Image (tube, rainbow, N blue to C red; front, side, top):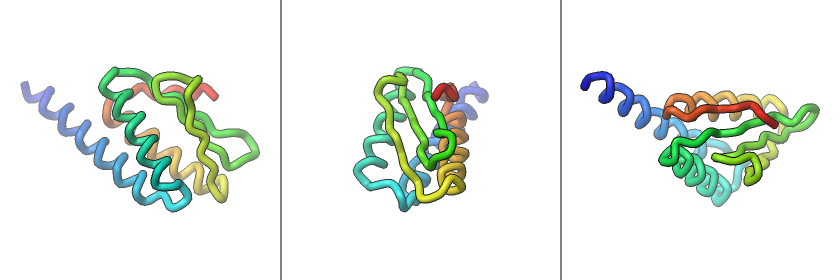
Length: 104
């Protein structure tokens, strides 16, 4: 029983980290952040994967929630900002139990 409680606690912490990340990303419009967060949470309930990719020689970061065909293409001011967001996003997704595949 204790193992399930710990996993549930980790998921809640991961979801909170995801909420905080979405709120703190200045370069992402509020509406996009809400849509992305909703897509991640829907993927979490379906136990689906998250597909991610950093576009080479650009500041684009792509996220597919459950499918690579419906993606969010986020553009950041610098590749460094993109990488910071990507690392935190992928860590939060793994913490809530989602499989993160680098496929783009």
